[in-house]
Length: 264
Image (cartoon, rainbow, N blue to C red; front, side):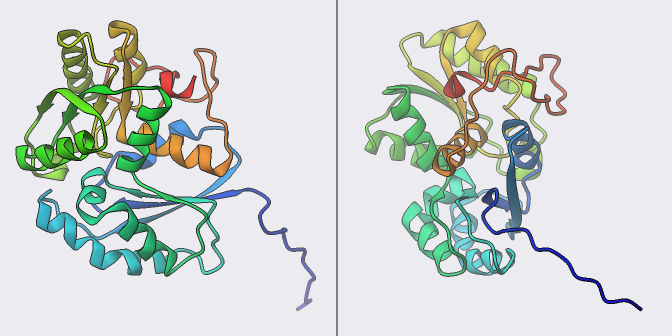
């Protein structure tokens, strides 16, 4: 048998992004393919153990698994940015604690999560008043609303599907979410944005239509997380109606290639 020589690719030739995804999430990977279409990146994804029910206690327990989840990334991975992809989990563990646990296992220039990203996105569009749509229990919603208000964001209106089981949250139809986000926006015309919380909600292909029908910026957990990762990694996800990215699969009759006003 001949022994052959080989060439190695240079390190840092493309941006490296990391993503920690809940075991129960059936949405975010599809939506990230949509947001990062045609981008020259390496996206590494690991699943973190999570029981199906979204409760404060189970969300807090994810902290115990973060280190092990990070250790499953490639040994030589050095992330330009990494996202912990759970909105309610970030609320109950805390951004600083998440960042510290990540840094213990792998080099990472920046760590974000959907809550931190939402605050940054709201600041970028100068939004102070929002409507809030979520799938969580009323108690989890109340804590998240309090978080926003403690950070200077007025939650003018809110609504929830009150679904504790994540296996059902991932199956809420985009048409349902679109209908209810539009209702919240139209019933509260003084808001600056409507925010759809939870990485398991399928929102990527309805955001532009919500904005078109209401004239109000629509944000979702996956959208703002992708935006925050991209801007910290030096990536340009700017899009318009002529963007040549591919729409993700959806059961909604209305699909679009437009990623929303946040990317314009």
